[in-house]
Length: 171
Image 1 (cartoon, helix red, strand yellow):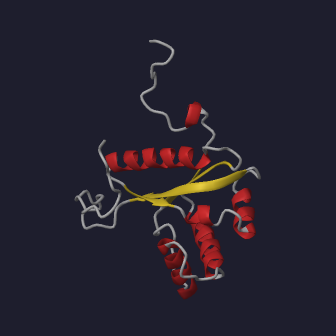
Image 2 (image 1 turned 90 degrees about the vertical axis):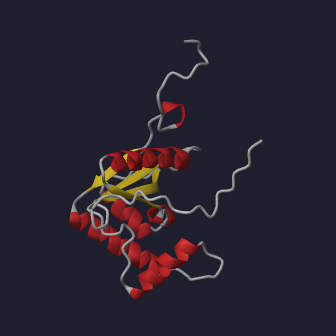
């Protein structure tokens, strides 16, 4: 192959840097502590009209005391990367999407979780994540909840849903 030909079947990071840091959490007490910290952090936030819809929902539910950012899944995979790395968000998103595709192949449900990213500078949450191994130079850019789908069959919903956005223009 020539030096400019693509030689890998896929990559999950820019320049194949492999700088993501994965925390595979299945310990129910760790997930419960994260849920408690996340709910507390969101409940303390100002609820403003100009906030992203999902963020407003997180704040509102947290204030009611019944917020589970990871949908009570038995496994939460938290993915961090160097905070000063220019492709941190893209690399983490690619890795999480690959995990979601793999989960689907295994008949598991999965959900992309961005709430920990929104709380990247919350000192209490950062301290707890550091106790789990997060380095000072890292931040969380995405997570994925994985478990059996909350459907009658326990399988992921594979029915096509109507698209209402993501405009496509062919040129």
